[in-house]
Image (cartoon, rainbow, N blue to C red; front, side, top):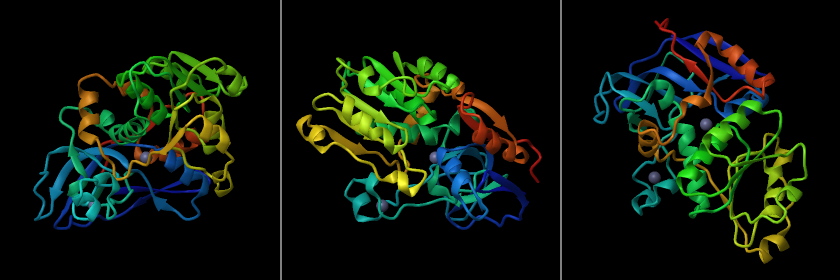
Length: 337
Ligand SMILES: [Zn+2]
Ligand SMILES: [Zn+2]
């Protein structure tokens, strides 16, 4: 069976490997769809040695170990990119989101098959595998939006319009946001179109104007940041009194991780800076159901599909094309042995 390996700069190698039988608590999953995450793109820029990648996947359970009770062969499932353990003190005290002993499946989703701890597998019902592969990043967007605690009619500003930002726009709308302004660079044509589709009412082109000027006279109650940390200082500048700023967005380079913020503005404006980090991965059933009942249409997000043998093309596309890509997927080609 085939498995894709990745290293910088954007190099992909497909290796043929044998796969063992699943362990007692594991299931063997045939991967039917797997999305490329922003963190995979980070790895494509920085990773020094070849390693497998991919964690946004859906597939079919083919075999289960002797102790597995929650799934069976033939089940259609999505994989939580990390699960809570149920045994640590935080889990037992009702704070599964703070689990200190997470179940971490291997991030080897760009493959024909993989063995994973069955606890992280969630049934997907009638969703297509493509749609189900979007549950994981949607859970990330869900955490970001929950952290922001959006109220009815809030003006919500979203920085960044990658797949997480786009789904966050839609979730903010479902939570009752009034105006939703998206701050994005003007070359991201596809993403601008999708932002409008998901409910953005206003667009600010961050490369064409001064962001602070663009929001002059407007009240901004909530801010969702899905862009590199440098935009945080703009977020603090435009935030209204009592604004909550919810952030997900890692720095690609260590030097970009250090930023300067105006603490007086934050103090006198009573701002709340809150970080989202959706691990363990929660909300899979909720995200699945929102997709199934049509409240979140993830299909328009999927802009490109590749087979495993074409994963080098997929990563090359993400290296060079920032205007037409939404979610890039690997889909099963039926050639797996
Ligand atoms: Zn991811
Ligand atoms: Zn735990």
